[in-house]
Image 1 (cartoon, rainbow, N blue to C red):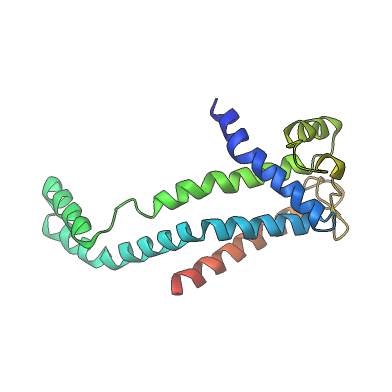
Image 2: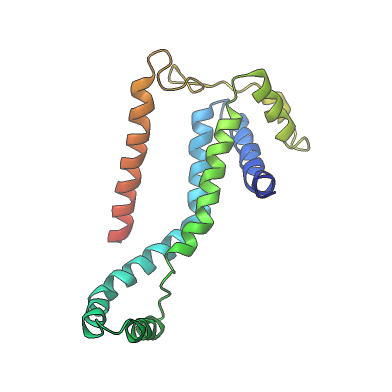
Length: 189
């Protein structure tokens, strides 16, 4: 049930948006992925800002929490009460930075699955794709099949197939490094 709801509410809209961008951006799946990523980043920007602010505020409270932990070392109930009082007085939720992440996580996972489903390389994958596209969008079915070659690389090949093992390792490392840099830049502002 949750899988079906997730597919209908998250994956299908993202899949259709991916295909629409693919059609608009010169039948280039890489540009489509970049465009949808930017769109999602813009849409979730307020959540990201809130998450960063809450994380900073909790970081600023760390020395005060350390004092409370030392002061009430033997009394865990009193320590919890004082900690919650401090959070209330400062207007910070102890789980405030988790909420935005919980909202964003299904969107990014949905984008991942939309990309996987959108670049299907088998007849079965093409049938799945055609069944999950919104027929009311003009010309959406005419865009199939998707050109899965980006810079001469076949996106449907798995790491280890035909010498793409290095790319299968390098691309996730580059994505992780770029996310780390963006996180550091966001935390400084």
